Image (cartoon, rainbow, N blue to C red; front, side, top):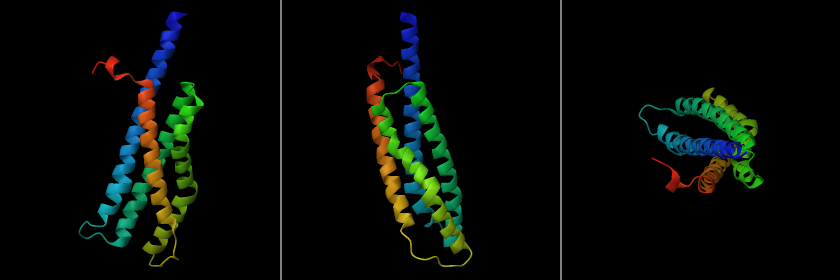
Length: 161
């Protein structure tokens, strides 16, 4: 019985490490793409608005697919580790934002890009600002989730580095 309990704790610790790694890789991707790459690409010499938007559509399309994958990995990991509801709550907001992005905002933004690239000026929209606001909320939520899960599950004085 003691060995089974030790294996269960070991598995949960391994799953916690996976969740922590995914969370902070996710944070890095959001920071790198949403808040560094996106604004800087338009400052590159020779980048026109349609070209920059086309690149952005590809990059953010890939990011949202990766975020869906990260969300699924986190959900699977939480299920496998039989995580408490308080841990689930930490990831609820970022996962919900990924769903909102994929189901609502990205189609609107992609449509606007398609219009601009075809020479049509789309009507005014706040969709981009909603996306930025949700990215900030998602980023802060992920950082908080990662820090809390790390504090709850890892004792750094017991880890051999």
